[in-house]
Image (cartoon, rainbow, N blue to C red):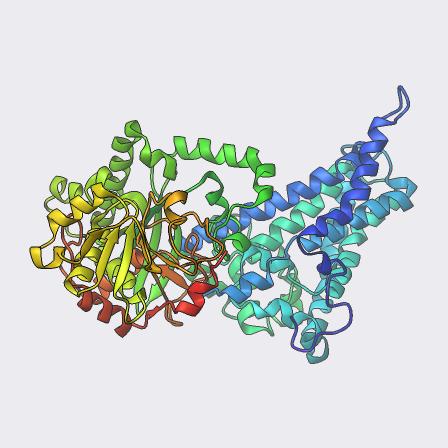
Length: 626
């Protein structure tokens, strides 16, 4: 929002929320009706019918730029401005498709009011030439002076400051403006469109090509990585006056009073507003190489729809805890296509880049889904992918690689021990994060608790929790006889006294893992607090109970570039397994933490607090009540 919002700041359909797309429904319906009800032999008006598909194409075009930009900045190559993006920017920019809705409404309205816009030909050379000339002349010239006017303090504070709230730009930053400002831009860009319509030189290619050109140049100019190669300017030197670069426009967002031009810098040269560091920043950005990370967190895809939740997916989805949306079924063609790509693409890919206390962090993802980890015939392939990622990290000189989600499963690779055996000369330290996960669970149990229920499949974390509690004099009650026997065999006689097998439960503190079924949850008394010790949260079947998050902590404010949520965790909350890898590098610990290896729980917990990570309070966890 602008610092002093002016009139027509809000979009007229903002009150509709996610139902805003309904404003196009009457027009789309009418265009379909025109096709179905046409008289036999009557000509089809292709231009009218493709308005809606063209709007969908524009959304796809923008999304490709969003994903590409986030992937490139995660890798770090050719990055222009090395600053952080926060959740407030994502929230501010989530309505980037409003301008596409506005254009759609105006296109339909123009079609209904202008008889000349009916039955446009596919191609007309004179119309394309006229559109080009009108853009180079009136559009670029008028935009330059409009842009300078928007930087006058009166208009800037009421309108344009909303756009400049994003110092570090993303492609969709280009269209984040108040409603009134978009009206002005549409009037400007309609000069070539209306002129060709009135002169009867318009064509589908001139219309679609011009709008696509505007989208392309807007997205490119705000993508925050340099994409234009030097050879283009050396081959045709005048091009520097006719086409800007991402670094050129990035300077406008940092300096504010330079580089006002739309897409053609010639007007900044003419009127003396060219930033003198434009060429220098351009060359530096092209040469900038991504920094090799110090710590890598290795995760994987969860459900087929989780691709939309990745940071390189849909930005607004990624900024919220992952939940399955009802409208995902409408996107099944894209989901199916992405699944096919992951089956073909046999290598990890970078999904996120962060900075913490001068440590460069990256998150890599294995292109496999959760269900595949439970397929016997997929395990060798998955283990090979994990081993390749570990080998790549070792070759790059990465200090620590933490294994997230099912990449550290006992049945899959014995909590990472398999890789230590296969790669005895490994320099990168493997961390499964078990000790911090145990510490988080133990410190989530309310003070004064004398008994807890332990349910779900046993794991390295569950065994360590049971041992710590029994040694501390807390009675641990198990749900299943098989698990009771396994735990008892691993405990000392003194600790085993506090391990019980019971059919009735009065404790309201339940420590739960994978495999806890609905019938077992129903045995818990009303008001029970379920504290997971597993990577995946339990299915919430009780509305009269509270569910904690999976072991996690709140990240410090100086943790940079945190603008997405980790799976189902809230904003700025990170899983214990991921934090453990960061602590390993910060504390310069030289041992692996995988297999049967466990660090001192108190030592790890203290280290997490010393570095600014905070436990999640009971109050915040209670917000997950369903």
